[in-house]
Amino acid sequence: DSGVTQTPKHLITATGQRVTLRCSPRSGDLSVYWYQQSLDQGLQFLIQYYNGEERAKGNILERFSAQQFPDLHSELNLSSLELGDSALYFCASSVVGGNEQFFGPGTRLTVL
Amino acid sequence: EDQVTQSPEALRLQEGESSSLNCSYTVSGLRGLFWYRQDPGKGPEFLFTLYSAGEEKEKERLKATLTKKESFLHITAPKPEDSATYLCAVQGSNYQLIWGAGTKLIIKP
Image (cartoon, rainbow over all chains, first blue to last red; front, side, top):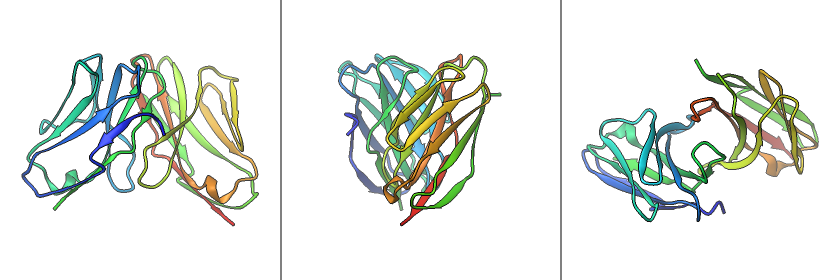
């Protein structure tokens, strides 16, 4: 158990809908990262937050957005969902931006 | 351009048959190289961080080494429970992690 929690574990929704994924980092970690992993694909970095502020952006679509709250938990919002958005979404956290990242168990999103 | 290449894509071994996985990288200003293990449907599990050429780290049947251009993950006398995808990532001067595609390791009993 890495100490990073993610909810929900599974999410099934329809195209065009909007969903919110939630992540709580390890105690003491200030950085949160979001990744997407499609079936049999590598990890795609989406976005990083550090202590409430956006630190870096990767291959994140405009339909996707994220934020980190004062209690350091983070939410990833996915809107106008498409079939191709079906994937595992992982959150990771680290003590200081750039150190070892510890991953949560992921949220499996299925868009029908 | 920063890049990480892992080889082979997949590796099938018999239980007890030692081997190595490779992670070749190109990065400006290496700050660290990370190895992770990922089981199907699970989040990557952190294994090692290596910071400079010549550094080695061990954990049970795994040993990671680093040169200026590549890293090896040596697996000694593997067991079926070592079956997983092993991911390599490098951190350059911009602090971002560049991930490899992974090596899928299958250990047959």
